[in-house]
Image (tube, rainbow, N blue to C red):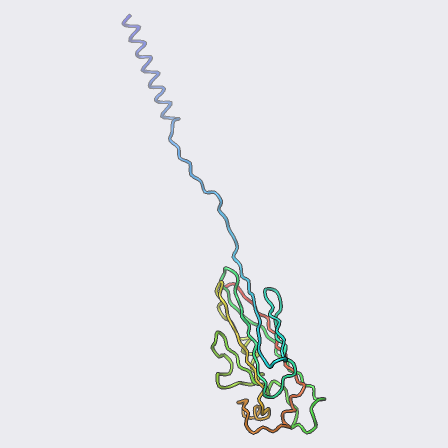
Length: 220
């Protein structure tokens, strides 16, 4: 009887050891974590230009433009002594920083058929119309006290390469003036009003200047 009890005990111990051995081989703790919803979203560059203007009453029309819409200012019937401005406000409406550049074409056309024979030679608005340009309120063409010939505008526009941060704005203001003394403006470069000789003012009659600008915003 003792022998059977001893054998049963040994068998029980063997079974227990086998159970522990199997548990050691196959039993484990576990912990589950997740990484769900990893997303990549491309950033955006979106240049939104707005155009405004000022000038002699009844002699200009403003088309503000906007996102994908052309804006411009058209001046008509301007004459010696008139002045005005065009303002371009450029907004980076995206969430990426960018660089703003411009490609411009400034052209001048002369219609000599409307210029009286008494005019002192032919002239174009490139030499006899004064302009000055600011960027962010700082003059980059001309100065607060002086306009310069219209002919210098294109090179300054084409040289622009400015950082424009996401949600940032850049404002350019082009001021123009036709001096009361057209020939005086052409000779001294100051576009002043002294020593006016009325007949000389006829040399710009019916002449035209056109500014075309393409604004480009590139990823910084």
